[in-house]
Image (cartoon, rainbow, N blue to C red; front, side):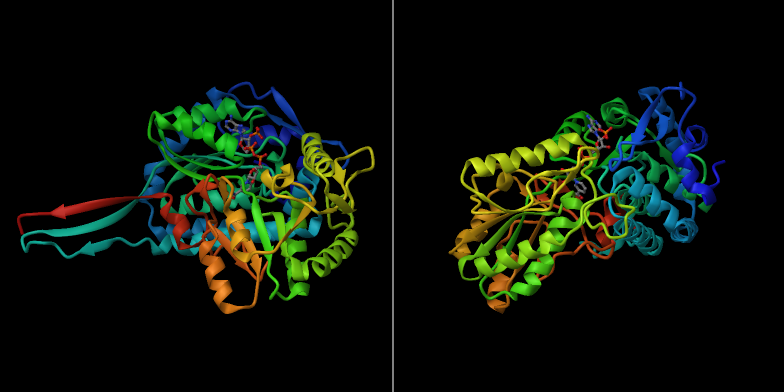
Length: 491
Ligand code: NAP
């Protein structure tokens, strides 16, 4: 068994991953086939992990299926206790987990540690929530019968997670599923398998029985993803990633009408009205735009500022953006790490080029930093119009386009004019405006006078093509439960 007290050893010792794959995962198959995990700050090889196949996925599904009845048969308190153990171990190992996360994903170490705390908070929340699964009784229309509703676990769940929050996404899926009595097979993103592996090793120590959670590593998502979507023993798919891949998985699940939870892409508007506290709006926009180098699904993608406060906002925001320091996430002064890969660099460059070509102006940044790594300067662009690519597509990088507006009603229509509906933000002080705008924005989450709203206590998720279902809060566990109506007659 892998010694979790020496998690950092993973980074140099591929054989530990083979142990992990044999022990927790799923198989037998040819674990000599491996794929590399690179540090995006340096390009250095961190580790090689087993590249699993559809056969491995099938075996993992069998294990999860075999374990599910006994896991669901435990008392809620017993399931909760194992989650509490996992929570404690994650906190005890948070320094190691944070370091692994920074090494494979690049985000600054302080952000990585904050993500580990956030992951632990989800486990804690669902350790508590496991004990609060309630049914209902219904007043029957006749006296000779009784009607009630019970909640039962869906069964085996296949989960697929992205690279941008590789620890908290694992916790956000595993903890509500296990609290509900489901079992799970999880495939982390190709770029960030290490922190997921470490969290699985801790879960094993926490006492999850064999087969209850299963880890699959794969260099090509489709290899194991297709098996998860088409194997009838998997009753639900929980996916976080791009809308494009979400659509594909939905099609693959459609033959079996599988249950689905999807947390997909976004194109978040951030609106500053003329009655806003401009200093607070700048603080909020810096957070909402540059956290994780802009690589978050709730990242402010379009910043709309009303003309009366436009100049003041643009100047103060640009000043703050210039103070952000780009570099290796292990440097304690760094606030912006690398982008995940070269494709991400090319996308941000294409967005800048398109905007400049159409008349926008760069206030700061706009270029790569250095020749090794995948660093890009924090960039502010003004004179942006809604027709530019950066306002239409999710940039997923440290690029802030500022768009001037005059008419408050028009800006809300413009903010809603997208296929996405994940997160929106606005700053205003007039109470009437605050209510009207909050209700009019077609988004699953709205931040009012704040640039940060993610919490284990709140329902995270989108509408339109940003997703189906919610993670976090009391609602998150419902996504892993079926409702069964019982009707007792002849009374
Ligand atoms: P992605 O390309 O959709 O990949 C996400 C996951 O899906 C990865 O594990 C990937 O595996 C896997 N995958 C890719 N193609 C697959 C296929 N054909 N079948 C099965 N699995 C497949 O997204 P990403 O680039 O990692 O993440 C960025 C996107 O995620 C952004 O759009 C962002 O907005 C969204 N996101 C949404 C939320 C939310 O809560 N709404 C949170 C975070 C991120 P490989 O790595 O092996 O390709």
